[in-house]
Length: 280
Image (cartoon, rainbow, N blue to C red; front, side):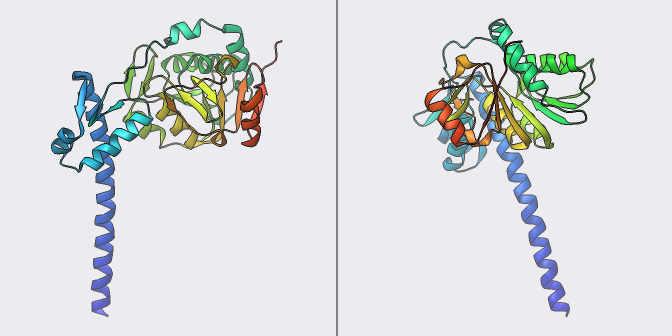
């Protein structure tokens, strides 16, 4: 009997130590990637072998870190290493907000009406999602909103919704927060709705050009029971730097006009509901 108890304690101890090791590895992974991004702010290129020595991990581990950061649009892969992404001109938040104002306002109101009293919502950063926040404030819907967008938080902060603002690395051009801390914060919550925007929408799915946004959108999609993409028709067929996810990860596309051709076929095939915000 004593032997069985000893074995049981050994197994329990082993399991406990295993859980601690997994938790430790997770923290190290997040910190490694934060350090990689910090290094790329200080110099234009980093090498896999150099970082493997510094972090005391295998080159394959660093390579996986690079793959993940590249998928999120945070770095550009280069031979033997990585560099900061070079993506040409993409209009900042202010420039985007001042374009297609009427269309975005209609999309925002259509999306805001999907939220019912007492529900929980994640809203990401973008010109169209800001319009959605304005509509939500106008409707006075009591709800809880979690966002990485400072303009969204400010728009809702004095109204009926309760607002939780994510921590993270501040992007001045987008007035938004991104990075590992943002993702860890979002992972704590499960919500009724997530509302995201995108740089483009193709048959592959929504995509994003702004650095760090793709990973935030992926996490919000993962944590939302109902997943809505808010996007104007001018972005149909476009592809941003980083793919956010596949079409079947969306429940609804809220837009100002109905897609056509292959995109419409792909959306129908993925069983995505298309809500068109008609002119008043």
